[in-house]
Structures are given as C-alpha cells and as structure tokens.
Length: 131
Image (cartoon, rainbow, N blue to C red; front, side, top):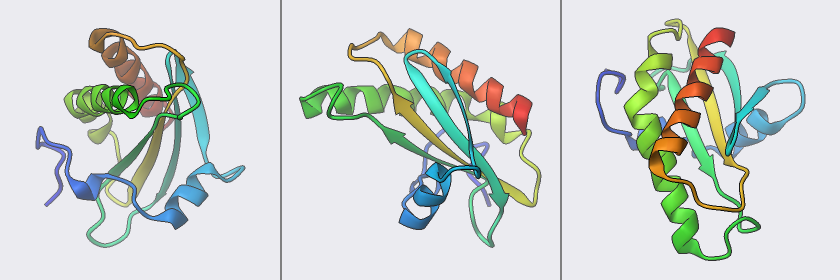
C-alpha cells in the first residue's frame, strides 16, 4: 500500500540511499527546473518492489543560512508544501515507474509559507508535464 492518498510524509517517501542521491545528481540521468526560491532536480526510474512511487529529499545549504534554526524552518516549509500538493504528481506516475526528486533552496533570505507553497506547486506541475 502506498502513501499517495495519505496526507502524511512517511519515512519511505524520503531518499536516504546515497547511491540514489549520486544517481540523481549525476550528469545525463536527471532533469532540473526552477521556480524561485527553489530548484528541483528529478529523474524517472524503474520502480523496485515495495518502493514508493515518489521519493524526495530537501537540501538547504549552510552557505545560505548559517543557523540551523533557519535551515530547519525552510525544510519544514518545503515538506509541508509538498505534503499538501503531492497528489498533483502522484496521479500521473505510471505503475512501473518511480520518481526521485530533490528540492534545493537557492535564496539567501526566508520567505513566507504561502510563497514557498506556490513555488513547490509550480515545480510539481512542471514535473508532471515532463512525466
């Protein structure tokens, strides 16, 4: 059973495999698009047995925010926005495929949650067009 209809973001929906992260950021295997203040890197791959159809990771660099409190706030905003809008993409993923997504923060300033949510929604719609 997948967590698509679920309003939560489970541990299984997160990218934890170093191998998958390297594959996601290697040249040629993934695509990228941005909607300020976020950039998204994504790739389609064959779904493994028991794997979630969509897996995400969130990256907020120390270069942008020195204090962990601010980095954690941004990550929380992105996670919440993704959780609200993940059905946009979940409905379009084929049964035999899965999508790995990395959200990367690009701004040096904080934004309100509504703006982060608009950016996440726009990015998920762009990914949907490319799937």
